[in-house]
Length: 326
Image 1: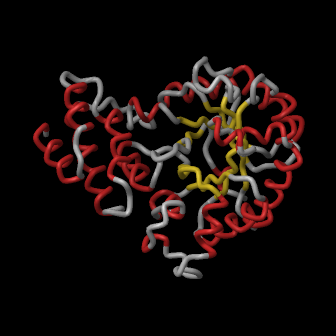
Image 2: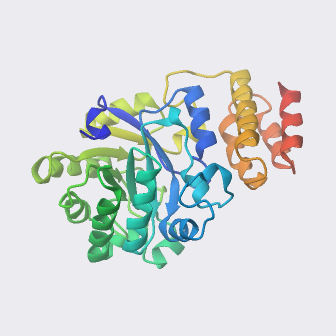
């Protein structure tokens, strides 16, 4: 039995987010109150396959010793299980190769990104663009299953490209006999500009029951905390709920804790310390600035402090300024 089937329902999942859900941030979420399942950042299979084939680390695959920014996305710690590696790209051969890598790295599952709505990604025929390329979507799923061995293969997608096509598209995906399917209740065109169509997600649950009952269905969109998750899961009938942007409002969103100003600043301090210990100079310092609005919000002086933090030019400068406010 794969890990998806063992989870107590409804379960929570951390959404994959570019330059956000790296190993350091996942460790921070464990401090605050962990989800039931972690997802990595999304990893490009073309870049990962090239990096592995040309890496002096092969075949040891000790990614912590390398500085390749693509392979860094696949670093995780034992405390993060169950953890799923999310991948995206265009060439089925590379999906096969990277799925084999993910299996070697001992992830708990592999997820195919068929939902990213970024224009350059769509223009290249990847991710959500696969809605209009069913033959390639099928090849990618088959290749990933072959490469991953017994690891469960899942897909994260949306309900359409420019218009809602839930029954057609998600019906097709259910026919692929996936272990899990995450449905973001918006089209690519809608981005995050409209409320998520949870009625469409509920349709997928009903189709699943008829097409392939074993597929786990995860709903995604507008979920801010565990209370939202339970309510939406009950209403739509999904097995689990994925939270993404909710962590930017409260990193304790997977628990029912309401943090104080000191707790937020203490958690930021831990984040900075773990970042330095884990990445050092292997990652661009400026990436850290994406996290400031997670911790510095909803207290007097938060805007002023966040503005000052954004002006810092080094990790050391950032640590000194944060310490002053502690």
